[in-house]
Image 1 (cartoon, one colour):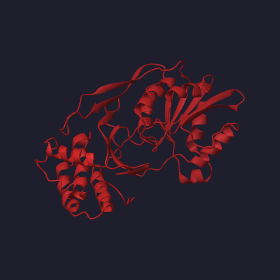
Image 2 (cartoon, helix red, strand yellow):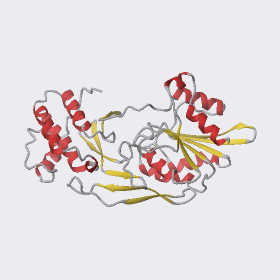
Image 3 (cartoon, helix red, strand yellow):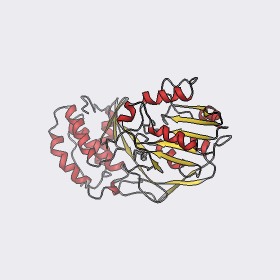
Image 4 (spheres, one colour):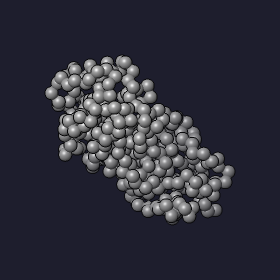
Length: 354
């Protein structure tokens, strides 16, 4: 994607960036380094490099990449930048060297991935709507809300709950999530759908909302945090646990649906829930987008998101691009959606009715 306008710094951001570059904090390059004139395209490119140098948490996972060499590789092109379109392209090329989809540029509501693995997304909105109308004709699943819940009876003797979450960001109200999902409490089984939860989100929302489905406290994942100017200045492993929350918990058989669009805080929720014996993951591997980021303003409208933490599963697997695999893989194709079929929902319903 080519974006035409980027990086007209407000004055205090330029001053902060230049001060950072000349303070001796910046990375492993020998200081001082000239960043050119204030408001120059070169200065703006260097600030992006420097923010990465001081905050990115996963340099240790890229042993074949020398960040100093990356600087020199792109410096000549940065010195000769003539437009902001070229600046955007150069920044995307530079950040893309790390092949980390947790690195994102944003222009207002527009998200620009620095690297994307291009996996197939195992969910289709129109097909999903048709299933919801069939499962519960009285439901109002016309638009995709932040979250919703229904209880329906696929057979005369079974009542199944269905809960989906499409966004764990600032619009998610985990306090309201508990009464909203009260409808499932007497269901014999539950389908919990996170396939459409495709933004980074807020981890605290997953931390609290998971408690609706937890029967016992369990270790969910580890974290290490970037702590200093050195690229490998990291904390030791910090433990995070799944725990009960809310007035009641749903602990009957639960089928958790995931896919390549399941990202960020939704992956934390997956890590919490997969600790429970009554939960089974089906679908596809998650996005591998589980490392929370800090956001830095580059202009009035542009910002960069840089992960300053790294996430590990309980068996110490680093979740960087690889994602969380399901217990049961359910293949999906464009032909399925064209035929009006959602194989993941079909498999989930078959499992809860066994």
